Image (tube, rainbow, N blue to C red; front, side, top):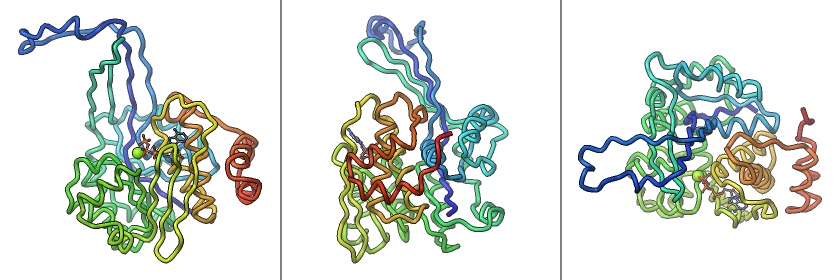
Length: 327
Ligand SMILES: Nc1ncnc2c1ncn2[C@@H]1O[C@H](COP(=O)(O)OP(=O)(O)OP(=O)(O)O)[C@@H](O)[C@H]1O
Ligand SMILES: [Mg+2]
């Protein structure tokens, strides 16, 4: 099956300052503030939700299409993704803006000064799915993840018009979108994926209760952190899947993306919702135990071990034939 993942593509620049910002700030002089901190550590991490999801799917052997907008500085990130099996040929490269970037400096009190440059991401609204669809000969599912809000609405509109199944993944963009936009984004989706906090926010902002949402989307997936996730489909019993809890909790950034990568992978293999969510939870566990969102690696045996330990022999046996061989 062919899946496209639309959404943000970004890098995080994380710096640490061995001192306290507070000591350099003079409250009476804040109107002419000009400070510079000499930092002694810089980590550059590849991220962006769509890129993280594609990376995870590629790790499981899929060839997902990444759809988003970047700058000319994308070259080395592109080769990293392509090396892992992500199809980047439909990524739009801006002629004037850089790839989105999150820059944060953390001091020894864990106080942070951060900036987010959305950059080329705003050009994602110029992406049309039609030509992509034509060039690959059809798509089985389009995931619409956090991106330029206008791009998200355009993609969902286009999916409805072209009768393309889509998964709405509004995540943090729920904060900036109004009720009408959220209703447009999710209406008619085959899947709506949120965490539990975002599920409540979706209901509050759209004015649609859980029942109304269920009428508008075929399947609703709600993730609940260490408590796993639930999958609700109209006319079927809810499915609850526990999390993989016997891994060290090192850095939770991107666990949601890891879950989505595994869940979509299961769907692409033709597995049921329960099995797909189990693959999602296993992928999330790899993200959780590593620093960064695309730094994990796994072996076939280890994936099977986690499935067996958490969900039993039957689950592992059903998923096993789909797992590729270690590279
Ligand atoms: N502490 C944890 N231990 C084990 N698994 C976890 C933990 N937190 C999250 N997960 C796994 O990741 C999945 C998604 O987690 P969560 O509901 O926290 O998503 P999220 O809030 O969207 O995360 P993100 O911070 O990436 O946006 C869960 O369903 C679970 O499988
Ligand atoms: Mg999330």
